[in-house]
Amino acid sequence: MAEELVGKARLNGLLIHVVSEDADFNVDIPTHKVEKGINLSDHIERKPEVVKLSGLLIRPTNERVESLISKLKSIEVKGQLVTYEGRRIYKNLLMSGLSIKASSKVMNGYNFSCTLTEVRIAQSSYVDPKVKAATAPVAEAGRKQTENKKQSPVYHVVKKGDTYSSLGKKYGTKWQDIQKWNSYDPKKIPVGVKLRVV
Image (tube, rainbow, N blue to C red; front, side):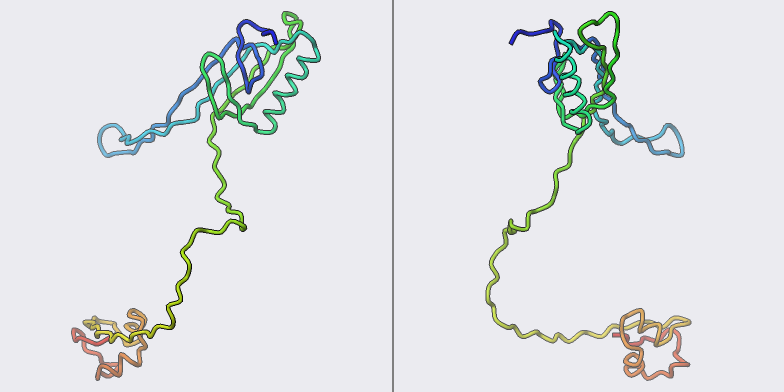
């Protein structure tokens, strides 16, 4: 197939004539306020590359021009990933803002413009239920006897306002057990004494 244009570029393999190719390579520089001096910056965040194209959609026949426009519209509407090969090569782009304009200076096509924005598509973490996870087989170990470990007692130094009930809630123990372990009247617990609470 003979090449139709001299100053050619390709958008997903489709031949287009690009007059202007403007690329933006921006970053965000987050700052944090400080008491004195200029704000602090400790990192940058790269923004997606954005390429703005303008040029001509030209073909020898009107049918081929309309076919090209239809393909470009389909790429935009379906959100198809695009590779652009012009002055530079850009990959993983989405096209937006495709517009065409008829001009008396272009008889076999249209002026066009569009924006290509770099994207990163997340991969699904879904695992098909038919695919089993790689796990070790379960060994038959039989029934094991659990050991009852004797818990060592925990003590609390009484502060003003402490009650058996409040200490029970704090340590996860029944207040009746705390009262049983300690011989103090619930209404007259002396401040500063050690009480067993667990």
